[in-house]
Image (cartoon, rainbow, N blue to C red; front, side, top):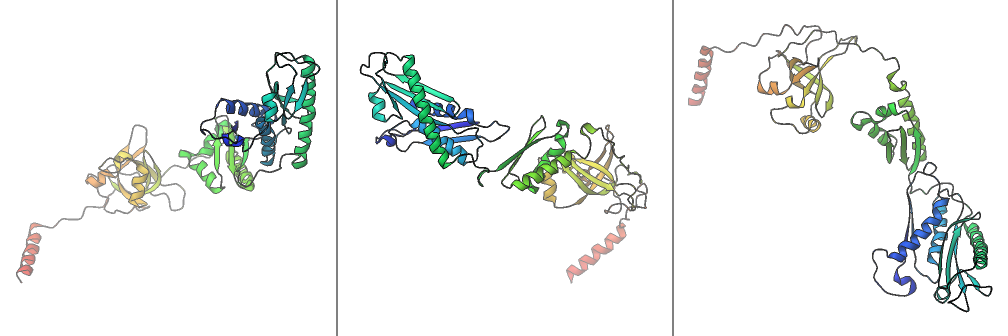
Length: 402
């Protein structure tokens, strides 16, 4: 979750050249600076963000990798990343009378070497760390070897130089800022019982989308173990959303062990199979539409009777998108034929039967009267006799002749 991007273009040393993918040198220097900063970063639980530091070297006559450590640490603190301790780095060098020999007491140790000292010297020793110790180091030598005494002197001189740089950094920014910038979304993480995840997500993700919209969240992520992470640019919305979610999952004990209220069943007249009814849409799903086609009691003592109009029974043609098709109808009610009860005990309805004219007419396209039994359908309207049709035809011909 942490990445340091190190870029060293030819222009930073007054040269021209190809600018493209990072070369081996850039990858190595970037990795060194990245490893120097990793030990001081907060844990993912403390700071659940992905972190990227970009170090673009615009001018160089020294150790740009150690400059990336110092600048990267200040950038992290300025961005509000709660690092453990400030980290700085310094490059050490060495001068020898005999480059082909081993370092001796006459070796000169250089601190914060320049480019020329790196090229003409016999050692490039990069050391980074905080006030308590070293987080990373890298050593290159051009001589035959280093004595332990020389290494001890170089490490001590590097420690003094590192502390001097840390003092200069502390004078500018002694600790990480208390809050993140306004351009960074704030995060909150909490845990719910894994059995309650379904309540947060809702059918088809309806509940989680409503939470994101109502509380102006940027994102909401629910893991299988019950951990919930929410993000928003408004800190007060985070606390409100967290309180709402905990209240939502706390309405009943997890696992459905709470006492459920008994559902009141429909107690009105039974519908007649093959009869046409006016159904009110109560739910739309990919597999079909639920409709209330028999009304409940006027006093509310029992609910209306619902049935399912399967997507295959919505229209004569094939319906690919049930929700889109029903919304395009722009109605809250439509006529359906009652097909009876299937093997699963569910009441089936059909709009296609109405369109095909295979359903019996109820005599009233409105929903059945609450006090009337649907078992006694109204008689069909009488058709006209042949004599009446002849009279109407002659009257029409007379009008045309006139």
